[in-house]
Image (cartoon, rainbow, N blue to C red):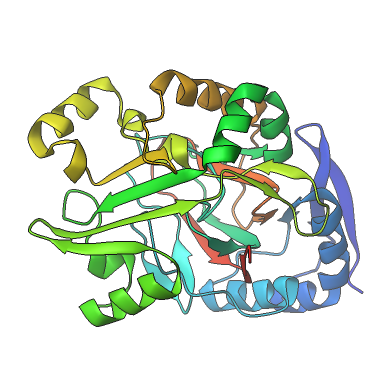
Length: 317
């Protein structure tokens, strides 16, 4: 096995450094996949440093070693991305000035990747870090009455697809309405073709138990989908322009009743308190258990290239 060593990072023993001379990323990944797998299972997060700067094809090969299969296709999207290699994508392509809040990938759906991997090919001139937070800790810090109401009612995600946000052709990766309908029916997503275009709604989980550890996790994106995430001024402008029923995306309790903004602000404050960050270095690979850890993005300046690949899809039966 190619030697490597663990070092503390942000107060946590999660940094795995490759030994000098480890200049073949795919060979290093294959040699170290068992060690990485144990760390990912025990810690939920591993940062790998010192294996060079893999290209998209090499990164795909490394994730295949770590996750036990090739990266998954990303469909039912919620953010703009560009595919750089088969099933290897850019990180969400929002304006550099924007913050992307903490979230577990695809937790608005009834299926999601168990793991997710990030590769920093070019760190930003300033900012652009990828903060993470522990979903177990978030669950414990959210007040009990909020947790219990969400767990009881679940979350309904409502989406209207247009150029204001993402068109349905990009979200579902098809130009066929019939393919969209088939996908929705297979994934318990309600849909209708309204005069304004496609509208979908789905009731999904708010709290989950981790399939391996049984621990309770805060696992939803109500705080991200809710119109209040846009800020008061943009929220008012969009409601005035489109009407609440035609907003690009919004979140309600599963019974259709509104979620108070004040409640969502409590959840956002918990994420703000519990997240931690590190400085990217070119070539860094961050692996997350997508259920145990959320991720986000800080604003940045200068060029930044972070690639993403997703692991085996999981769904609660």
